[in-house]
Amino acid sequence: MTAPTPKISIRGLYKAFGPKKVLNGIDLDIAPGESLIVIGGSGTGKSVMIKCVLGLIEPDAGSIKVDGEEVVGMPAHKRERIMRKFGMLFQGAALFDSLRVWENVAFGLIEGRGVERRQAKDIALRKLAAVGLGSEVGELWPAELSGGMQKRVALARAIATEPEIIFFDEPTTGLDPIMGDVINNLIKKCVGELGATTLSITHDMVSARRIADRIAMIFEGRIIWSGPVSSIDSSGSPYVEQFIHGLAEGPIQMPVHPL
Amino acid sequence: MTAILQPIGRAFLGGLEAAGKLALFSISAVVNCVRPPFYPRLILRQMIDIGYYSLPVVGLVAVFTGMVLALQSYTGFARFSAESAIPNVVVISITRELGPVLTALMVAGRIGSAMAAEVGTMRVTEQIDALTTLSTNPMKYLVAPRLIAGLTMLPLLVLVADVIGVFGGYIVSVYKLDFNAESYIRNTWDFMEPLDVVSGLVKAGVFGFLVALLGCYHGYHSRGGAQGVGAATTNAVSIAFILIFICNYAITEMFFSR
Image 1 (cartoon, rainbow over the protein chains, first blue to last red):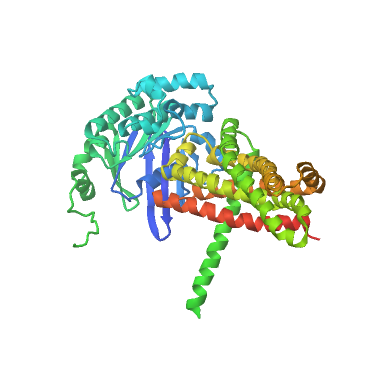
Image 2 (cartoon, rainbow over the protein chains, first blue to last red):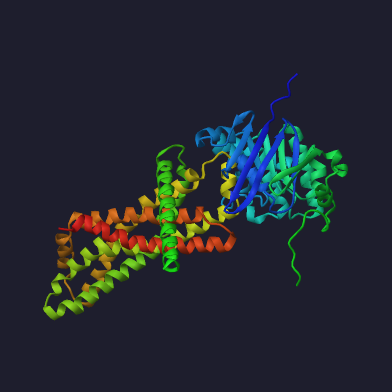
């Protein structure tokens, strides 16, 4: 019996910005319905990897396949079809300031799918309710919301079109632990209901343990370890050990100079 | 010698690269203006922002420009007993040059900077990336409506500025310099040629396109947070100012050179 085609398959992905090599040969597969978390320190290339998959950054070399279809170098009009499969929760929420909350949530339905405004508003309000926000919040502007509420609205926007693949970029960064846990629970609940494949990047280990099926660690632009979430504490990798315990001492060295 | 030539060469190549990037952005922007989907709501909103909300500042600048023009012309022309030429000077100066150029400068300051700041903030807060992930082309959604609005609203604003500017000259001439109101209007009307107005409107269309294009271009490519957005805003306005004057000469040459 052959293994199912990975939902996303990344092979030999390279990206440099000037002399700085950010991605140095990433190889990664994500199975359909799987929740994969990529952990790693700041500046190790996590966000760049996701942006390469989304086509926001063009990689220097390598292959990215979505449902077996190569997307690197794909023309823009074809990519629009692929983009319909994706939802994304940005680190800073990235809500549109000029639109009300419900319009933010309904944006992908109205502009991307051509759903009529009234119908899109009903769906948006249902999605807001699913993330614990009342219909009165729908009429507010993004600037009137707290950080936690903005993240919840961004989550509602990411799931509004019921995408097959959802990316979460640091979903709990900047939130207090309780709100972080609320977001983790919502992600688990919403993704579970949709049956979506998810790729999340974080350095919050609580969040990683809560929402992942599998964890991969990125270091210096390469995946250096991956395995089921249950095996993270016995990974045998000194890099993973240092990262999950948050130790300054270990193979990952920060260039710190004396005062 | 190398030490002198190297920075010059680097600056020259940098300039060429920037011009190439701007040219590619312009082509992509124009293509996206004529290809569906279109966003009439957004186009209308930009038209109101550029056209309607610029009216007070454009009107004030135009009326005082017309008034000063009449006053200055009088003090100069009185030396040669050529005061009767004032209506002609006012109308030709306003319609051909001052109306389009001053309106474009006002709009560049007011709208070009706002566009660069708004689009730039959207860039650094990942809102433009979010548009892409929501199956929406940012060039169509953000840039095309602004270009269409700039291209269409500037000529309308200039038309208004022409009328108000000429009216400013009329006020000073009739109420301060004791010109006959009827003969002032008749002189203005008789002397003015369609080409004077048309050339001004063509300039306005080009200036409107440039102001919107540069505002969007610099905002779209801004990097690095608040400082990057600030730099984008400054560049959008200062380069728009320079290009307005360069294009003004080129279009004047095209219409009126013999």
